Length: 285
Image (cartoon, rainbow, N blue to C red; front, side, top):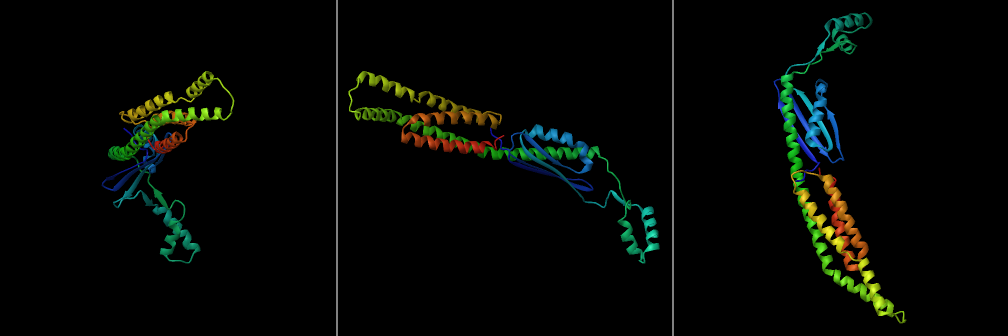
């Protein structure tokens, strides 16, 4: 199972006097990187929000927001009438203006408005908390859907690498024979007598040095292990990344040992597929 780190989730709660919108966005990141934007009234709940998000999403650069829209004639800001009246009396003594103009000036002066600090209503917060859970479910489902696309892409590319490896195995005898003929030709061009037995010994040593049997076996095992890890219950992009590194190591070794153009071409194709896997793994949870 693969989860993508890219996701989006939203949930909306309609309360008697306000509409609360909860939004989550996530991108890839090596660890959990949270950016929380919430109204000041809910600041006391920020720590619990962060813990809930981190426990659910595990990794990713996550933007979390709560937006509150007032839908009733209810405001926490009130006019400080005694202060405003005092301002208007003082302004009237120095300004030639009617009451409307005096009020416009007075309302802009310090302490003309009182903001009543709201307290968290725990019953209301209980409903908002449930909506946060709904938004987390939504982004998790989004990540799962994106992960299914990644998973199929990984399987296709691993299968392609496996097919290319089979082609490598098929042409390996041809490679060995080409090496043998090249060495024979090189020695013949020297126009010097040489010990056939010694030459065969050196040839065997040379061919064994460039033998890729172990690399083929290990690469096959790594490819199988990659698929097994994808099919496990837990999503583990980091683990798949480690396996991809091992796959790359074996492919590179085969390339350095091949000394045969047709095989090197196959190795280049395997490297290309692996690079695309590594790019996509950056977004796997």
